Every structure is written in structure tokens, then in C-alpha cells.
Image 1 (cartoon, rainbow, N blue to C red):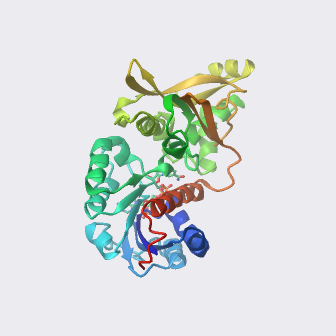
Image 2: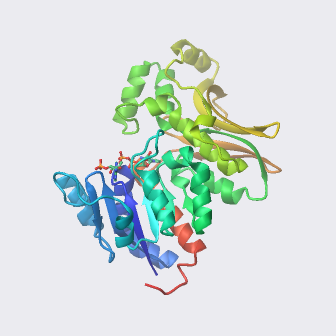
Image 3: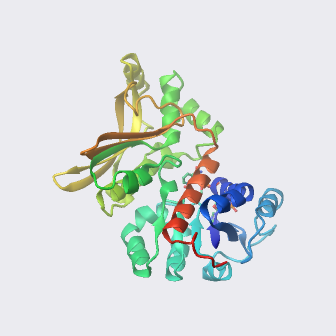
Length: 352
Ligand SMILES: NC(=O)c1ccc[n+]([C@@H]2O[C@H](COP(=O)([O-])OP(=O)(O)OC[C@H]3O[C@@H](n4cnc5c(N)ncnc54)[C@H](OP(=O)(O)O)[C@@H]3O)[C@@H](O)[C@H]2O)c1
């Protein structure tokens, strides 16, 4: 069956989704029984819609040559609003636009419209999840729809999938994860004798740090991820404001050198646990031995260690990542879409 996708954002992630669809549509159809069609796409300049399916190659070319998916070279095109979702006849909204931790826009308004229109939602952006978690999940449940968000935590690391599937039936006692690549690259560079500023420049050259890396180095991104993982692990409804947080800006070089001399590394770790029945989520700079699953992660590598009863310790890491961050995240977004299609039985229904 055809599954129609409306998507906001055509940056690293959105373009990655378009590339994967252009290159693998037939393969997905043969393997998973659904034909994924991008029927609406929006960037900051405006939206473009074709309920019969947009041509991804054209979208990528328009973005490269004209700066906008809609081919709009100046001014604003049609907005990504409720009419955009209706006209694209979408089954699923993929939200992959930039976001913030103040009002979660532009995503939050469109996500609410999508759920009210009875679309399922797949998120790459974290804003709505960490500002409006309860409202978001209640609205989805009321409408009988789902909000998948595997890509929001260390994509392509399968943290949420492990919690939601692999560890079903166990009791999660706690977790700790290196989930912010920028901080790990900077701390690694400092361990290798470079200054903090040189570490920031290196992360920017690698294309993983923003020009303004505040959200990464002050622990905001790691705190958002701590809240998202805690909610999955413990069934809580934490927001970013509930996570106590520290960043790496003020870590003394001497402390990093001392740790290195003792065979340890400093890591910015997102953690969560149950303390006297309360869910506690935090972000801390902690020492981990080089033989610890998180201590050995270098550069942009990511990992999570989950303590589960009765399984013991479960570790997942992504090392030697073969794809760029955007493609890896896009692939995680499509994993959510394909899993959703299977849960909904869209692969067995012959509607087209
Ligand atoms: N990169 C990753 O690996 C990764 C991993 C996990 C989660 N995420 C999250 O996924 C989202 C996308 O990341 P990214 O790396 O693709 O970011 P990006 O390269 O900066 O792209 C952001 C996109 O959002 C679009 N946008 C901004 N405001 C918009 C609006 N009002 N309406 C429609 N589109 C709008 C931008 O439009 P213009 O192109 O016109 O500027 C751009 O296409 C972010 O929320 C990010 O935090 C990213």
C-alpha cells in the first residue's frame, strides 16, 4: 500500500530522508510491503505538496540550486500548516525541522494539527517531547495515534527501541549514556592535549557542532535526552526543566589530564535512576575508566548502559559510524515509519 509522508525540515535529516527514499523505495516496498511517498515537504521558505508523490531528486536539486524545496527564491511560499497536511493527504507527519527548548516551534503547532487530523507522528526534533510530553502523549492517545521518536536520542543508537522492545518484561533500574557527540569530541580533544576552543573548532569542522554550540556544551541537549530516555524507561513525564544539568565549558584541563594519567576519561553523561521511588534524571561530567563501555567511546561515538532486573547490564554502542549524522538519523526516522507501517498492518492492506 502507499504510505504518504508529509515532512517539515529539509536540512541534514530531511534531505537524508529524501535521498534514502529516492535510492531505496523499491527495496523498502519489496521487503516491507509499503510504498513510501513523500507528498508534502517544507523548509523555512515554504512548502510544496503533491498527493501523488513528490520527486525527491527534484526537491534536492531545488534546495541546492534555489535554496528552497518549493523553488521559492524570495519571500515566503505556502506555510507548513493544517492545509499543508490535508492537501498532502499524509498518513504520517515527519517533523525534522529545527526546534528550541523555549516554545518547541515550529514543530509543536504542526504536531498538534497532525494528531488532530489523525495522522501518526514521527519526530526527529526534541522540542515538543521535552516541553509538552504529557500533553503530546495524551493528545496522541485520545486520537488513537502514535508518536515515534527513536531518532531523538543518539540516532542511530537504538536506545528507545531497546527499552521499548528488547527489555520489555524487565525492570529498568537505571541508565547512563554518552549521547551528545559534540561534548565527547571536545573532551576527547582536550584529553589529547588540545584546548577547549580547539576542541569546539574540531567538532565544527566535523560538521557535528553548531556555530553556537551552547545547547551541546552547556548540557541542554544531553538533558533533553536524559528526560526522553527516563520517560521511556520509567513511564515518567519529565521535561527538560526536571533534569539537573552541568556542561563541559568549565571543566579544568588539569582534571582531564589527571584522569587521562590514571587511565580514565571524562564524559558528559545523561543518566536516570529510581531513588526511593522517584525518577531522577541528570547530566553530569563523570570519570569512566577506559575499559568501561562508555569510557572507551572516542570522538563522535555514542553509547548507553542500561541496568535492568533481572537481566543485568545491557550495553549498546555505535562505534565507527559509517554514515554521516544526517543519513544515520534519516535512516532511524524511516525505521520508525516502517515499524509503524507494520504495527498498523499497512503492509497487508491493499489500499493504494
Ligand atoms: N542532524 C542530526 O543528526 C540530528 C539527530 C537527531 C535529531 N536531530 C534533530 O532533527 C531536526 C533537524 O536536524 P538537521 O540536522 O536536519 O537540522 P538543519 O540541517 O539545521 O535543518 C533544519 C531544517 O529545518 C527547517 N526549518 C526551520 N524552520 C522551519 C519552519 N518554520 N518551517 C519549516 N521548516 C523549517 C530549515 O529550513 P531551511 O533549510 O530553509 O533553513 C532546515 O531545512 C532538528 O530538530 C535536530 O535537533 C538532528
